[in-house]
Length: 251
Image (cartoon, rainbow, N blue to C red; front, side):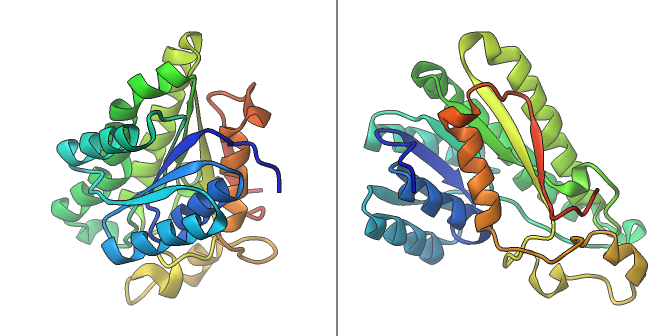
């Protein structure tokens, strides 16, 4: 495997499992020092330990990305530890399904707080360091930002916001050397999507099938590979882009 991130530092949120863990390990395999952030203390420690065993430096940090002080402290601790920040990958997210007419405001707010506001807070905190290093941001959106997701209004709205935020960052800071891109996963096998992710008791199976890959679901490493490409010099001329990694779900 190529070592595209030698002497680089990557901060990955949602690193305890799924796409976040796969992304942390992919950066480690390519030579980056990795700062692994997540609310799940035990699991994020496992990710950092696995990254270290690959042969790089890695640290785990318990962080609630939706908390402004926590997000800022997480970024600063990363820079204090490694001396710089080159890549921010916002993967942390929560998924819930509800009949829209039964969706509580508290649940709506929590999904947006983690998925959208958390992405905003991490980007804001990391921005000065990324501008200094000539770094970049890769945000995790979703196919639900590009097409309707039955029973997932809060999730879809939050991920559409992530896309809009990504595009705005790309335009505003391109002249200062910052790139910002997003991936839109779909039909990816992760703990968040397993077991129907709390689907309501009675759903229309036709609507669920609309969100499935044309061939088969695949593991989170397929998304991690695209994230790594976007964050590397191979993606140097890619800015403000959104890339579907969905097995043809929306084709």
